[in-house]
Length: 333
Image (cartoon, rainbow, N blue to C red; front, side, top):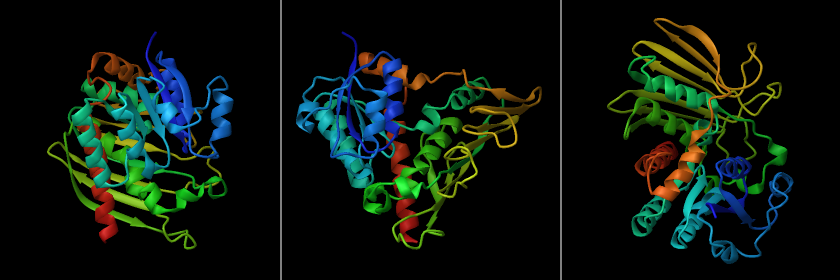
């Protein structure tokens, strides 16, 4: 029998892609457990009608799975992670993998004690073929040495369909902890940085005065020994955009630049995963939709071989620590 997984918590729609992509990597899902009846539950059942629901968390933890897929309420993810690792499972968590620095320390201690893998699915890189192609181009030296990234993460609020926890900061952790962890991951990855300094962090509630804990705008400046980065995240996606957000990344190198228009190309080509490459020889827009999503197969390989081909454990820790420290800096302001 090959590798198996179990889903713990269906509170965010990201669990759909996590479950589907691990199945494509040859990992069999044994079932799921979730607290109550989150609004994502019907969609999960529709996509995976064959999966049974475990009656209790304990039953799910004792099912013998190799991997736990965790997409519970963000503030609950660390506790589920620790329980799963103590049960002998590796973990793929939805982002953010935790919502406080204390939780991060608990996860680090559990990884050290158990030897389990804690991987956070930074889906804006791991679930976009455009990011796969960009990684290949950077590795090939297509734009020289990367010295800066500009990551934009706009999202649609979809107020009517959001659960109550979405509007409580103690549950979602803040906009920088949540959304901006994606862009921090990309900055470290594309610049080849092991760590970075948060030189500026800011959040605001510009358009939702009735929800005092909502942060609908955030920005971060990062600096490492390899380059600098600017991050902007928000909940301002206009209604006319045909998808949830016009997520973009610009990677500046000493010999050119790459721009990723991941989800939509307004006024340009249809579809997703558009990569613009400009260097000394090429000036073109590339359809990257067939570039693949290697993270999931690599994680399955890592589970079997105790390796770090999908993502280094230290990188995962560092991304979440920087996101949490940026959030803390902005909150103190």
